[in-house]
Length: 502
Image (cartoon, rainbow, N blue to C red; front, side, top):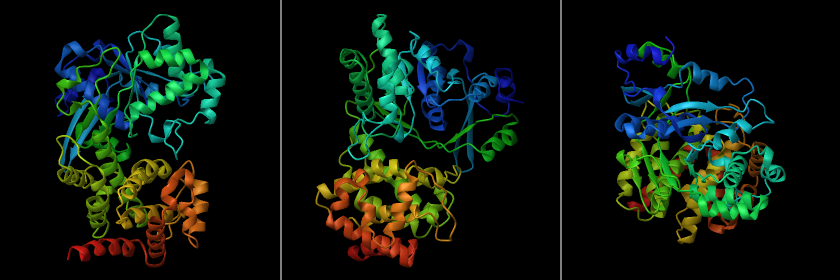
């Protein structure tokens, strides 16, 4: 049986929680760009839970989309064949909780690479009051060194030159807001659901900055009328493969071409700034509205995302496939724990209502969830984005605060460099997985004999690469990794702290 409205009663009798509402009765309120697994496990699930709980909220349905051309309209057809329904399986150890989400009600495709008008048309729908996005850390056209909007990016320049034929989501938003202003329609809220520091401010800077290049008066109107709340999102959702599809067929007896598997933990912290109203998210326990998201954001990005970025390059070099296996490793797990407690957590600062040691203990248990099979490959991809957002700011914070204990973070940078040399310790070839791979690979090979050249990538390391203490620790770590191996370098770090405590 293929998932559809028609089989909901049948699968409901086999342990799958089906909607208590008619999905066909949901009307649109949110336009979301980037409907990958994280979105469905996070915002998609939250909206489903709200529809279950409060019938008055069912005018906030999600229309999904992507600006990436899909010439065969394949994704929309797959979703439509399932009546837009999606399976979410929440897994913890041997326990699995499966539910059917009915929160997405339509999908807008770009079938012609030269025609993004379907997205523009959807953005002009007066029912759309929130435009949300999950486009990954690298999708915001930021200068990697300054972290600010890059007006000279080729895609941005193309949109500025012909905003009527915008190809980026930000250009399309600017064009839609221009048309809304002309037609006397209200602006909408732009809501980032990505792991980008100050993600709402980033969206504002990109959209207003682009509009300023098109029409300064439009930029002023957007600044005064649109909203860009900051938010912190958190849930681990893994990539869908044959294992996940087989789980649905064998355990529940039906077919879903793209089920989503995620962990039990979920969290969303937001600023309450929505120019056209918002869903009643305060009704859901794991959503929190605060005046300042930044402390929560810093906590999550440094401890969780920084933890993944610190753990997974060593795991990849040792041919370890999954995050939980890396946590079970007798050297990698203790290395990460020592690093977090001594170099990462001390830079986070106070977070209202949070004990950071307890938070880290929770993160460790999440990483160790073997049911997730979260891949190391997922966490090492696009390192040039991840390192600049999750690791280098922690190095900068330690240097600014005068901390001399930088061996662990320097080791993380050395592991990334060693990874970019292109082979694991067993000799297995590492396939390119970064937009900057050619440059990173060439620089990493040069660093084998001259480690400092890696830190001379100023657009990535900035002033950190010039700090004598950090350069010293990095050089020492890379030389140890190359001569004695990954495990020896990590043991050396852990033992140095054990000796200091003793």
